[in-house]
Amino acid sequence: MTGREPAGGVSRRARQAGGVGLGLMGLAIAVMAAIALLGPSAAVPDVGGDGPPWSLRAAPPAPLVLWLCWAAVIAGGLGLAVALGALRRGWRPRRGLLPAGTVIAVAVLAFLPPAGSTDVLNYAVYGRIAALGHDPYVTTPAWLHEIADPVGRYAPLAWRNAPSVYGPLATWAQTAAAMAGGGTMAGTVLLLKLGTALAFLLSAVMLGRLAGRDPARRARVHLLWSLNPLMLWHVVLGGHVDGLGAVFLMAAFLALRRGGVIAGLAAGVLLGAAAAVKAPFILAGAGLAWAARRSAATFLAMVMGTGTALVAAYATQGTDALGNLMGKIGAHSLADPWRVITDAMGLGMESSVLEGRLALGAAFLIGVLLCWGLPAGPPGRESVRPALAWCLCWLLTSPVQHPWYDALLFPLLALMPAGRLDGLMIARGVVTSLIYLPGAAAILTPTPFTQWIAEIYRPWAAPLAADLIIVCVVALALAGGFRPAVWAPAGGPVRR
Image (cartoon, rainbow, N blue to C red; front, top):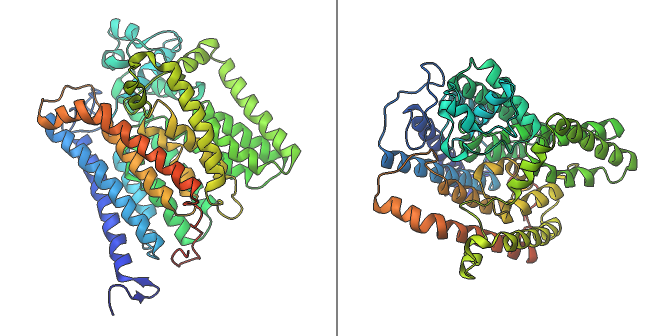
């Protein structure tokens, strides 16, 4: 028997590829854990304390940390792509392997210090401000730092003069963690990370329910969400609040599955809760609205639920919460896909209006193209296609490109049929992840590699890669390149 011949319906090469993919993903997760376990470094911010989150405080050199970060992200993305390719060719992981791996990975990463970003420290600071009776949408972390507060002393410099831009529900979670965290940064960060890890696991459970009983679809969900090294790195290890928005969004899709006015109302409230964590989650409402279109009562109940949840949440915070959110819309990031165009036109920092118009126009056109060009969602879950289309068009074209925003994308992608979009989105996640690494506020030792990152990769290579992915998505949508992918029969490979 050759490597190309089926054995039990699955070729030996497919089984080998599946094993290699899982091996690379496991290696990536292990490296991520090692980076955090080494303690404060170029990638791991210091949160103080002698208890959890635990670390060795080994003070690793910055170049080593940078190489480990890049290796983990690249190996994780490559392993994910290889495993998905094997899944399409009929490989199926051993039953229970992926769920068990998910629980182990999340449990380990949740108790380690955050890595790759200082955002979770900002969450802790905003929560501390609220716990002390002040308004985090008005009072900046600089005040907490100046009074030598035990949490404020660790406030990251980059956001020290910026009030909170997060939704009211995120602020409530941050306040609760601060109140229960013992007045320390370490305790507050640990509770924030544990909450995000729990939300991540609950999202995985709900995605499994939405995927149904077919082993191929359930394995796809685990690969693209539960064991996705990119999501484990940003959502669980990094502790980004996007994981909290994802659990409410998946609950909304699950609630609407039953149909009816009550289901519509519940789905609307849950969608509003997701948007009250971070505003972009409201874009997935396009899919829920599409699912409810056949019943005017269900549709109106969903709209009322969403509106009521948002109004009630923001009413507890006042106008400053909305004002800060609107100010965030005009922000930019290192991976801004329009930077190449505006810099070539000589506009530089004066290009915000032009970039906004380009992003809005491109997002609308790409959203329409994806609604037409993407394959239908899973049976009985046709709402996933418009939800993915409108979330993806924003993620692709927004001047703010952060890899943790993909917590909005990967759960929806996991529910779709396998196709060429998988590889493009994994590539995008790797490119945007690398641009922000090592991630902590530390000055790296100048080397040819770090100079290449600062002078070539961040200002040019990453934005160009983002532009190339946009072009590929548009070209494939126009050419029908996403359409041939179909659902695999239970236990069998994808047929075309």
